[in-house]
Length: 617
Image 1: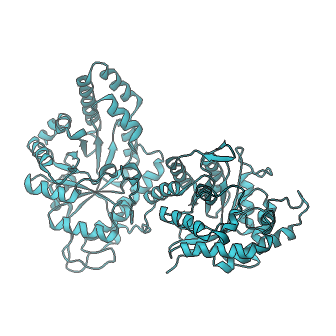
Image 2: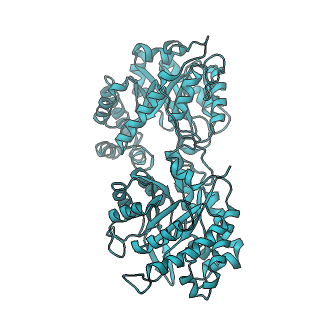
Image 3: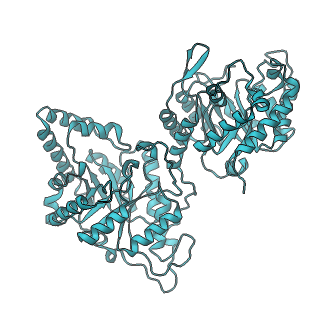
């Protein structure tokens, strides 16, 4: 079944639009003095290749190659009589490139002339110019329209009336602003948003402009004055002139980071304009996937889940040693290890034997850490529990599998005796060494928590009985130092509603910050395990502070490590362990346990942090 733009607008989700057509055509060797709109007739294969590249990058909405395909601009090339034909061909090319899940919108840009009261062209005349373009796009089979890069409210209104006079298909209406947040005609973004809303546009927003930073401010201001979905398609930064060409220098990562910020500000349709390429769109798509699962998360409060007749969920204290200590109030010690890079688990086995002998409660095994390929956490956990006899807490990410695959994995894990699971959404592939790999993100950690809670009640996601219930102790992650604390608290509340039974924090370097966060979640009645990362060196501290997503290392800790590093590597390592032990003592009265990383696989370092407490427990 084909997707429709109306469905995209109504579904409440974020959708990715393609990037620059002109930039890509120029990159394919088309001279700047060529009419790019005419290529729809003369070189349709080249245009289709651009569409396909954006679709492969992850765009779910593509624009026709018709930004300047109105009779006024075409007349400068002697092509005004071909207006309808060029637009129809453009729509057909895009339609041929687009699979069923991708929408095609007809791109309509300004006429390139001034209309009344700023010029001699009457509004009615301008409307007729746009109407010719609309007819061609409709004949070609578009799903909707994109009015873009307008500066004059009267002109974009004429374009909107032209569409509405011929079609009821959805309209995305976008204008462009300068550094001051105003259009070239002096209209501020608030007035732009309210006017486009009053016209009746289905989506309102900004495109082109001067780069992501200015556009973010504009989107934040527009969100205050309109209830319509917002769109944001910035240029790839400020252009630099090189000869007769404009070069845009914003990296794909920079564009993706700003896309994330614009989504949080309210944008639901994101993409790029001048200078953006499929690589930019791929990075944006990957980031959008981490913020939004492909399947909308619907949290079913745990009280609404009822086991089938004859099925009794296993009480928390009876599922595992980890679950028993959670239920009875014991202080938990857990050490986090990497699974092996290859298929030989010998090193992991020896590390776990050392930890068992030291008395730690469990070993936590990462799942594809930092989007790198390693042995899966589930088979690694099975091997450890079989060969060592210590419980594991299995990390499980939503990045690499669809929901059906996840359920299959988890049922197998349950059958093999794994009981403790830490559910995380997962790092996008762009943080790892495989830039061309794609993420799945079928559901996120909230959705998977819902799924596992149902499995624990003998139900699949559809409410169908599966026989005996699974016995997972369900953990989730939280970031006590999140930039958007309210969003983090909201997501944690959803996770608790979905069935979470404990949470593990990001590494704690500021105990006061953790204490303040825990005060705000006290009503959740959720046991929180404090993450602790013993630093090995100043370089290790700076790496965590600057290159690991979600980590915050206070300047005071960096300074302590810098002073210690001046005395040598051993002094720095000892200082890192001391800091970790101080943090453990600081959180022991507020947290229900500690989750200690073994940096670079150094379990002796982790044990110097937890050994005394592990033995006492």
